Image (cartoon, rainbow, N blue to C red; front, side, top):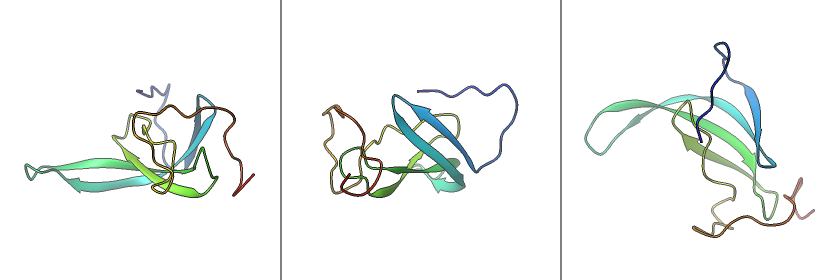
Length: 89
């Protein structure tokens, strides 16, 4: 999902998408498999299932697709119900 801002923004800032809150932490350099260096935004969020904090990465103008931490990851399975707002809650 693309993000469009009316004016330039600098991290840190937060966005909420489909009930999931992401906080932009900053832009880091990433080297692709072909050797090109690109900018990647690091986002912090709470896991939808367990509430543990995790870091997701995406292009600077996109929201990361991750809604779960590595422990709870379920690729292809939609996050259902209410998100956890704290560990175990």
